[in-house]
Length: 323
Image (cartoon, helix red, strand yellow):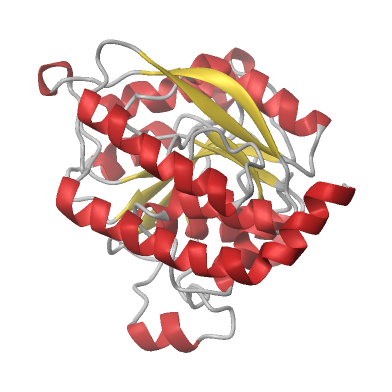
């Protein structure tokens, strides 16, 4: 795939998140380059080196763009839906369509997927000016994919992202409610409080209680609620700054560590109840959770966070007493 140079002047004439070029063109399809260990560990931003490859633009017909614009919500210039995606299976298309029916724009970060989902999304984006696709050539993990989306969104002037999983577990119908809560309190993060049904594996439901206890302890019960539920609205600037200062928070440890460290930074949580649905393999559900690997990752994360909590304890106590 060829990569065309990015014209900053041309892009600046478009609204944030909108596609460039003539009226009716579809969203961008970006290819980010692989990042070596030296860049990750030694770059000045503390995270990933700036992409050398620039966006490739895929344009739909003016008629298709106009039709899509009439059938979806008007575009927000501050808030977007961000969907990190890694080999998500058949539920991805349904998830993206559900999100697009509720919000504009929707961005998908394809995190080194090998299941053909990047090509399907590219085809969808050609006919939908509200869909923007970023393709990472190698898997970086959920947090790494979110960070790539945060950086691209900040460059285009967005201030907040709502993250949701690509496998259909999160309720697209609640996107407007979560976005409205964020717009009313832009300094806060809006965290989903999951309501489980019979489809939820009890081992995972019970196991997450331990992680939730530690997250509450590490923040002096600041109100995170559920540390692992990834249906959330984050303010971009403080989250990106936190991630740039370290090399953690790139995989399954992203959601709980993001919530804890944002609380430490003074970003208050707002909780909204939201259902979660676990789909079986027969229903098209796909899970990349590994009980041994990911629980060990969470254990190491909480060891780091407890150490950080001890150092921050006077500040946290003072904040609770005098806020």
